[in-house]
Length: 326
Image (cartoon, rainbow, N blue to C red; front, side, top):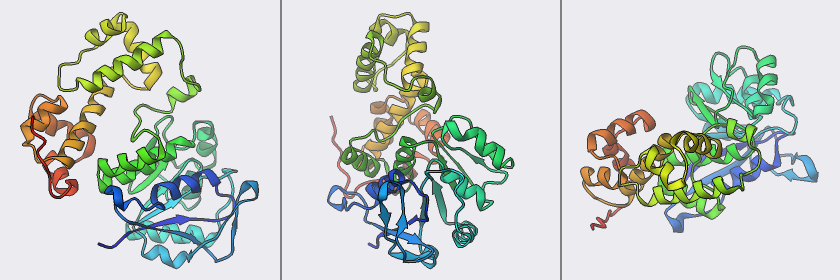
């Protein structure tokens, strides 16, 4: 099977952190852990080394012509978000989008896509501290205020720094399955996906370390091990020793999402894993993941993943599947 062709688009001013994230997700051979083979290429307008902050340089191994072959183009963020991209880079991005190639920009990389005119009339985001600047400099862009990442017309943009990891893992997940993304996340010692929005980080830039946070961590661990059972806010609040209203408030502050939304995310993730790893019948997958019925599971897959459980299994199931019946 051929490798999936990934392009890291480089030009002076790109952030070394984003280059490292892209390289870590797509540039490491993890085929021994059932992760697809990726052919990551560093693409630039010329073969000359690309300078980055801190005395670092990136040596390209392909020129812009290689973008014609790429299945995914990744645009790192910028140390200075207003850094102009070279005209050939902007032209190459326009041609790639016209061909239907998926393009993803991390953090301030949204400014590069906006320079190319690709975000005009489309939803996009960047780091919360740069939202006003992106709006002012590119008023035709529909800037989202606080999401972690968004997609519009095959153009992906992500919020600041760590949200670039979230986006990269999400792109792996939707193309190659939740297990591949989880395997990469485990090797990077990071969460395979996070819920919530940028708002949780604007309001709480450091983790809570008080009694409530510890209690909620315990409650989340309990919920993860009991997804197949009914999980209500009052019951979880009682386990945390709080009123339902106080519990919901503290939970949202700690995770950036509501208890019920968080539980739904975990159940979808559990169902994805079962569909990939087992050949259990759909009603049993639904039961173990806590959906109660195949119909309910199918509705949530359609709403959240824009696919059905059966289509998901057909795309991402390991071969051969095993039942793991209990």
